Length: 136
Image 1: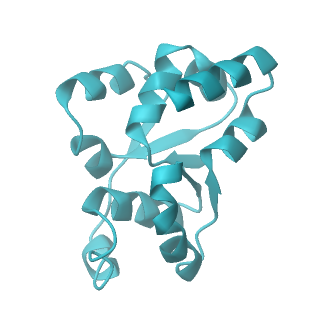
Image 2: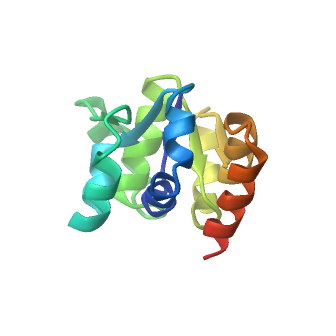
């Protein structure tokens, strides 16, 4: 099970049919707080994928974020919290790598998007498309 932190890249994976193939074989989660940080159009692109699970934080989240808000957004922290409490690996894009220290300190397994794609996509053509859309 994985939790994805980059909503824009996730939407692009969905647009190019890469996400459907991943969802057929893996459980993918996103944080409801992280999703709500984005505009309506992006939310609609993501919510089309009904196999994509939306996770909600519980009461323990308020205590867990103390001292962490200075380096991360509330959405980023909610993704990390869900990964920790649900025993999932969190997937970061290049822009989110500053969160890796928080993940390590919280004993949350993390990997970058490239590694996630290598592990979950078997079709080399789809991997090539991923590299093209990531660069866009």
